[in-house]
Image (cartoon, rainbow, N blue to C red; front, side):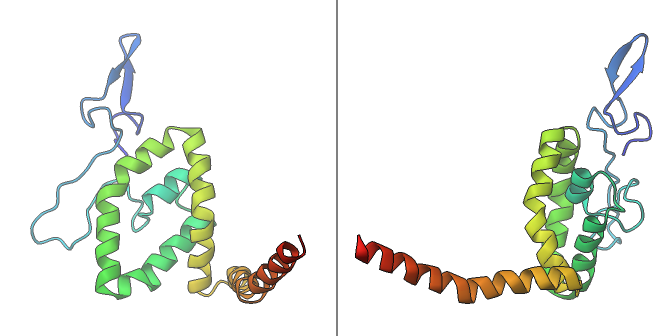
Length: 161
């Protein structure tokens, strides 16, 4: 985030709030890439390699266990293929403004956490988290065994009516 305004996008001086002249009210500073850099964008507030912008905005801290699961999924699954690297590059380009928007609205943070819950669970299962593996296995088992049985029961009920 901007070290001039502390990420708020505005600074208080002369007894009122003013748009920060350094980040132009966005609260984020984008460091331009040099031609010899790798494909990842560089920003001074990334906490090293913590770059799950939307999840960090939703959960409030890059050290949240759910954010760590998403980072592990990025490193172990997405970064191992060119398609995954392209997706991560697109995410790094598009997500900072969205994350900044989410971080400023409590209702958006809550909605984003709800929307991320299935993704976090699947990401945890794909990276070997035992609890998430059990949840995903249970959902798959219900899908394979329970849904056809439910359909048959509904067909029988309609046939009786």
